[in-house]
Amino acid sequence: MRRNGAAKNVAYPAVLGALALVLVYIASVAPTGNWGIVAVAGLLPSAAVISVSLQAGFLCWAGVSILAFLLIQDKFCVLMFAVLFGLYPMIKSLIEQLRRRPLEYVLKLIFFNAAFTVIYLVMKNAVLASLPEVLSVVWILYVVANIVFLLYDYGFSKLISAYIARIHRAVR
Image (cartoon, rainbow, N blue to C red; front, side, top):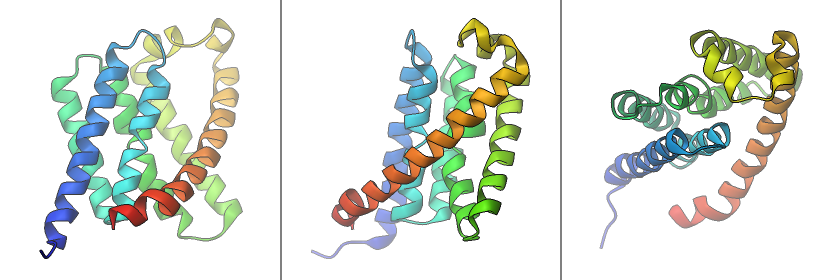
C-alpha cells in the first residue's frame, strides 16, 4: 500500500492542532498550571514544522488560535497560546536560520517581550492574579519573565532535539 504524502502533510498538523486545542481547553479549566499547560500546547506546532513544513506549523497555530477563540471561554489561555506559545515555534525556526547566536537571542527576547507586553496589557488582572505577589512590580515581572523565557527556550531546544531523534523518525 502506497502512502499519500499530501494527505499526511495535512492530517499530521491537523491532529497536532487538535491535541493543542485540547490542551488549551484543559489549561482554561485547570485550577493551576495554566501557563505550563499552554506552554506544552505550544510545543505541538513545532512538531508540524519539523515533520511537514514551516507553513504547516503556521496553519496548525492559526487553526488552533481561531478555534480556541471561538470555543474556549477563558480567553487568557487562548491569548497566551495565540500570541506567545503557539506562535513561538515558527518564530524560533525563522530566527535560528540566521545561525548567529547573539543576534538570535536578541531577536527572541524582542519577540518574547512584545508578546508578553500584549498579554500583560490585554489581560493585566489575569496575569497578576496568576503570579506571586512579589511579581506585581512590573520591572521585576519582566526580569523574571525574561529569565524564565530563556530557560524555556533552552528546554524547548532540547525537546526539539529529542523529538527529531526519537519521534520524527517514527513518523516518517
